[in-house]
Length: 100
Image (cartoon, rainbow, N blue to C red):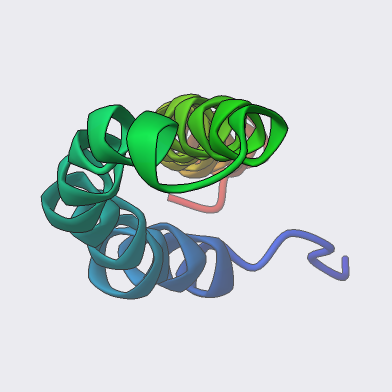
């Protein structure tokens, strides 16, 4: 029987999310408040539509980065669950068919 689910590969993907994706998304938490702090000064330094566009853009990016980080955390949890379920299914099949 050929296995179509590679537990090691999926586990590595989950670990890569923790190591490579979440730190990048969370690093924006340090920068975005500084960008948002510029909002007040822009309303006196540039034309009103430009300042309003900047305010909307920084608010949108802040929300998007937070949402993306949460989605990746949920994906990481789901990948771990898939690996556990597949290992349990393999164990059940091996036990049922006398592999263990």
